[in-house]
Length: 428
Image (cartoon, rainbow, N blue to C red):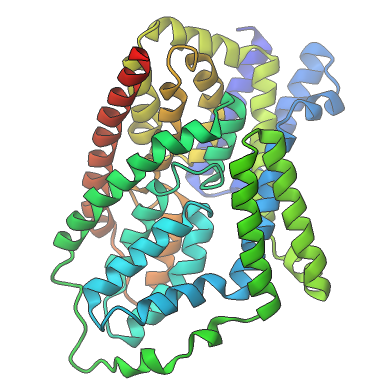
């Protein structure tokens, strides 16, 4: 590694430290880090900024942008709340069944939404339903965060880290779903009984609760725009069909952008407002992060890192799987999972030649590790913030007491499962 590469690496480390401190906006830190990295490339190698920008993963950035547009329109239409309310009204007034309904619904929508928008969509709705029925909403919020993270591992659009890893490591989306969807179901089957047992004494409604209030609310009230509601259903169907037929990243980006732009066209006068309220911080955070990673790649830092880890792991697929699951899943669980995915994705591409399950293990690690502590990821903070606003704060020990042991169980189960599947691929 030359001097320029070392400086860019220090810029990355400094950016991550600043992000963890939460004293400076993470998007601002990422963009500033990218600018510094670009300046180092220009001074050291005479690399012009326009050339530097062209090295970035713009197809992934556009994919994320398109999916954020789709989610924004679907969420604003009230589609998810409508479906959730219809399901909850059929729970037979049983708090345990309400818990199961919330978890099942979150599991399903997490295959199409990143955990952050999932909690933004479901968090406030969960609080309101639980307040209506005099049920403590904190166990459900914590459980939703956990489920939303591991439920996303099998889907290309389930989380931003998934997109980054799939594109960079050139993972076959069909193989990803076939291998990881059974794992997500297994984790769900393990988690729900444990969560129900842990919260058995708190999933009860007060005697004074008026269950009739829930049945007085017509699900149609949740629909804020019928046009956007039906448009969202059609768009989701097209996306699912498109991603199923075409698994290549270019096709996925093109399909997503066509659907998103089409939805904006049919939104007419609301398009401007929807674009204005888009999660631009997430988009520009990716721009800054991908810029730093591109600089590391040009300075051969990533190549040296990949070579170093590859020489350490050798051709041992089981060692590679363990590294990919436990390093991002446990050791780096306090860091936002997007930069971890971007940093380790090139390694996943390199180790994929050993066994195709190795890069898939990175998807598992980056998704599972984020929910072990309250400040591990943004969705956790959404749940904590909602509880605090309602005067019933979620304490650090309360969150960690259930999330940390369950996260460790998930990592162990995922490792054993990946070993078994990798062994089967070896025999084929």
